[in-house]
Length: 270
Length: 270
Image (cartoon, rainbow over all chains, first blue to last red; front, side, top):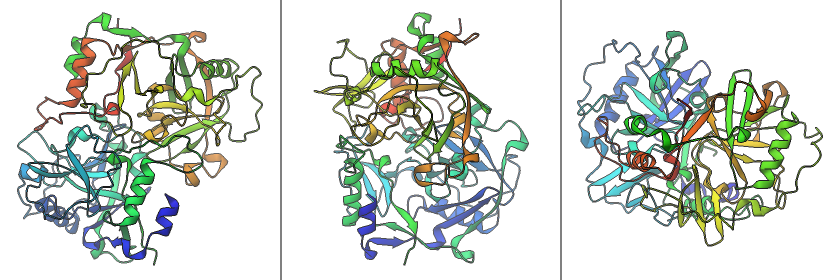
């Protein structure tokens, strides 16, 4: 896999849009995540508003549940939201009218997926599909929007990321809006909360968020790029994930589930 | 799921064998793991010997790779092994002659698995199968035996546990010998190593192992029990994992991959 990525062509990589790149600073380091382009347009607008207004600054990571999620937002649930946030409906869980582009998947898992009849990658994101539409998949590092019971869908003020085995029962039940592309270890290695659902029981356990900024509104942000999931190198990479050929392996698996094929993202190297 | 477990009958739970229960003490807490009964008999014997001789005492966790494994053993690779360890062959990766018991699986994933044609649970363990035999699956918390390049298969002196999305490409390539049943958060929340493969680069980063003991050779060990994977309650539980019906969920997934159906283990409550 290292060789495939090293041999990939420059034109197979796509630059991440800095206006969808989010930088979250913690005492222990920086977490960078990318907002998804089109799955939940109202939430994308809300998140840009929340970040631009500095709403997350001074809030905290309040929940770390082992093999599940790390979650951040306003622990007091009293901080006033900025004006102009959209009300969001459950339509954000499934995108019925997809752009129509044929998506790519190397078929590395032979189509055998416990959760959906169809699945694959489109513009760099892992997706599943049915006759109703398409939706992103809760793989490791994906970022979603916390909510209360339906019909509440959340506004984007409470976010979580997956830090364990893919909890795909959440697919179509919560809006996914992005993924961590760098620094997830600053969240996945946090102490687990001892309260119900992994919430921290004491105020002093919460992990302060120093600041959250958009990439296009911050100086000196590194450029990131992902390997186009339409590229020949991605197809070779997915096949290599499913059939390891390096000397350590005796038996190639013959398949890989979609969350075991993380889309390569790197700091731009040219 | 909570209701199903609460309503399960006492006779649906099986007590864990204390002679296969291992207690590992770290400064930050105790990790308890269960050795598997039959997959790798030589390794099971080796592990009992290593633990009984106190071989792990004073060693350390040396590798923590995000979304992958935590690994412990002798960082110096110089400590002499106890005498009498078996030489282990690759036959330990697949068990050709299975006891013949029909295994149970609720079919919660519709048989759709990217890695194996057949899979399910047997005496509480997640397994996959082909015409060659059966093998345990690298789910979250499973414990395996580190090795060098083939034909080396390791002797049990170097162990790892899965702390991320199931790395099932390791199935049939490394011997799995157990699973963590309590305290995995003491390993999964460790700082990630910054060296290649997540190894700690500095000696002082390593996490000391205070002691490792067998349950049947230690006083005051709590009794543990697992929900029989042949039981009605397990079938109901697996179905509920695949089709969440609590008020939070709008859409049941309609399936669950085998690693999203962790076998319930608890401290014995009667």
